[in-house]
Amino acid sequence: MSTTTMKAIRLHEFGGPEVLSYDEVPLPKPKPGEVLVRVHAAGLNPPDWYVREGMPDVPEELRPPMNLPLIPGTDVSGVVAAVAAGVGDLSVGDEVFGMLRFPGSGAAAYAEYVAAPASDLARKPAGIDHVHAAGAPMAGLTAWQFLIELGHDQPNPLQSGPHHPIAISPGMTVLVNGAAGGVGHFGVQLAKERGARVIAVASGAHEAFLRDLGSDEFVDYTKTPPEDVAHDVDLVLDTLGGPTSSRFLRTLKRGGALYPVYLAEFDAEETAKLGVTTSLTQVRANGAQLAELGRLLDKGTVRVAVDSTFPLAEAAKAHERAARGHLRGKIVLTVG
Image (cartoon, rainbow, N blue to C red; front, top):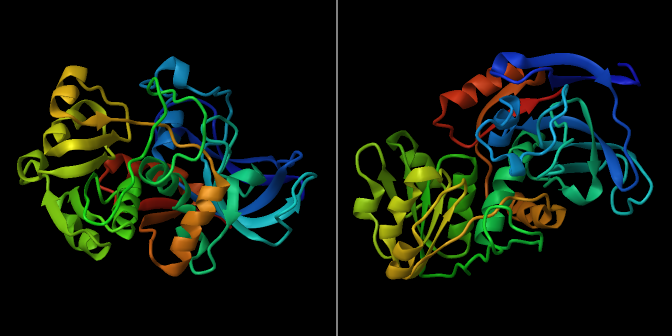
């Protein structure tokens, strides 16, 4: 293999999966505080296809710079190949995983190598392989920052104040909508690990999967509207969000909270009358939190479900799979 170039997926224009091009590109060089990672696997996330499309539905003030051509992707698992100045806790040969430079630009995860801030990385759990590790960062950190600890004091671009997760404790009831997906299946497991009674909402095909992850109750939304059967819930994690998220307000007890992962609007008078709160935030790279999640992954307390894998060169097929929806866990690209 060349010591100066590598294979990567690039966008030369915005559009459908067909615009993903398998190219020969220069090998990145890590800057101070960064390491060069030989990528073994890269996870797919919704921002990847939002970027591929040019983010037409994302408010302009929330869009990162997108200068073409660009390499998409944020989630990787691999091995440190080189270490730049200012990195004291990682060495060549260390196995690492992370969500890189998010929110922002320049993560460039769909590639054989990536230059990554050391602070965005954690040591890969020894008990899982690179494919499963690559499926964890963005989805796992999203669930963690919504449910467990925000972990930063950066301004919240999605609401006027910071997100404050309520403390999940034994005896509480947590409902997870979209429970079989990437963020959802982590949300189920993290709530269960904290002792909550968990109601999982997904299509019927995922019931056995979600019960195996610890769900106490299951609602097949294709047969029964969850807001008609779930009551006295302490917390709703709605991984789908959007304009229908407000229907979950009626499932909450007074003092409860609704967290939509994607943009949603609520009537302030209605939430005040019901005595509930709504809150959302944007996930941020955090190597320290990922290390905490990694310890749960290593023990098997939390597991990563992999929907499907594709070679890096077949990234377009991976995006086509994502577009069909009804994922069970994460899609992962295998590299090398």
